Image (cartoon, rainbow, N blue to C red; front, side, top):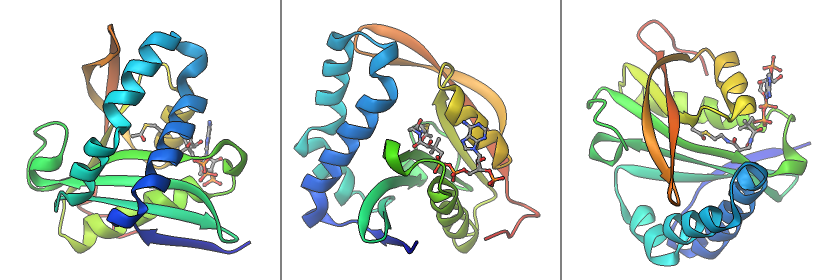
Length: 177
Ligand SMILES: CC(=O)SCCNC(=O)CCNC(=O)[C@H](O)C(C)(C)COP(=O)(O)OP(=O)(O)OC[C@H]1O[C@@H](n2cnc3c(N)ncnc32)[C@H](O)[C@@H]1OP(=O)(O)O
């Protein structure tokens, strides 16, 4: 089983759109109305939006492959690209999404470790993320990775207001890879 992680660029936009829609759908379609899912997918993953995000210097996307097959992706943000004002000493994991058939093989952890490595390289003191309060699997995964809840914010899925838990991990004494 060979894992590979590589940074995405503009030429990856179609693949990024496909894997974003597939993984978002698989994760949330059972707990949300088709209308709200469709509204969100169109807003978050249209090609213009993804093009802007790929061109943002303070955001980076990575694909992870298992045995040369695309298995998931990571999006990280720093500085003003963070979706909350968490300060210049923090890095946001905006998304870790692993395709269903590749979950529980250690790939989510590999992407988390990639984010930690960049946070340490760039001298960040904390790493944080927002996760839907009903996404129990992701909350359990991030707790396992050492994150703790520090607050919450609201978020719109179509016309439904939802709560995201803000989870934070301090890096001050941590140089794990
Ligand atoms: C900020 C955000 O991105 S929020 C959205 C998060 N993404 C999603 O919800 C999309 C759907 N889910 C996924 O993509 C994946 O299941 C993830 C990202 C949550 C986890 O990635 P995976 O590759 O499945 O997890 P991975 O195999 O790397 O597990 C790492 C560790 O977490 C543990 N873990 C993973 N999922 C769970 C869970 N549901 N409950 C308890 N522990 C878990 C594993 O047992 C493993 O422990 P170990 O280090 O002791 O062996």
